[in-house]
Length: 353
Image (cartoon, rainbow, N blue to C red):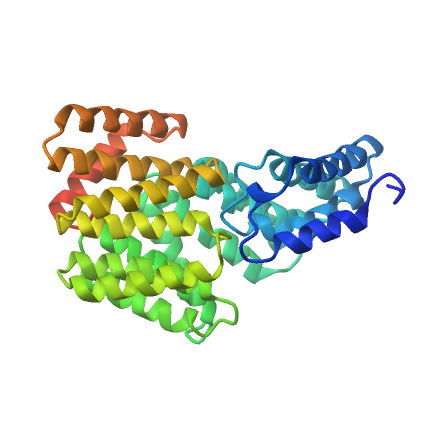
């Protein structure tokens, strides 16, 4: 792909700006995104697979954040770069690109497709002798299995992963965090808290791991709050949100997730005005990012619960119908939601995750 056809300098400048805090994909003019789209089209037309990989590496950092799901051009680049890696028979790039796609599919709520992407990435990593890359892809299937209600399989994967990771490996904080989610599901809140504290102590050692810390703090706040330690929970939430504010909109999904959890704490405190504000802020953040339907149905479920608690039964039912519609679009069985609601209510472990 000739430089006369594609303005690489302009593309590199755009990527550099997007890496800065406070600059979201939505704030970039359509004309600038058209340059990226033009580069993709030019590469596809000329079968310049290396140019597509170059583009994917240039903008790859966006796919690791929580703000690009609604950007059709980045989605197009993601798919095109996977085809390019296949055409080049480059298993390393293909494994990386499939793994990133698995993450984004999971964040959106397409958990079965995500599993398939992670399994393909795992096999490729094994082929090239990257056992740790394979392990990380295998580990991610536990999150998807849990979301699909296949808890026994999720636990089996997670226990296998934990048994294969050295105790001093700071990456171990990730599976320990997911272990806490599985413990919380069945009301083992003290054990979940301990697992989250272990995860946090490891994640705090990771250079540049602040976003991991922010997520684990939100989880810890939720578990602590469910045990009645409200002030301690507030402190964890405050710290989590302060970390997220430093990124100035680069992780909108994480911000929405944390505000949803804080709203659920305040529901139990009957601070409904604050709850509505937080849910609206979470909704605004997730809709501006676009496409994160898995979190959106949870926000609507919390709204339905608030309306029910405040005696607005008809409105609560309407909101719950929206929950069912969103879940149906994600191919998530509503029978699973009912089961999760009953289990969470019985175990006093919060709303479904």
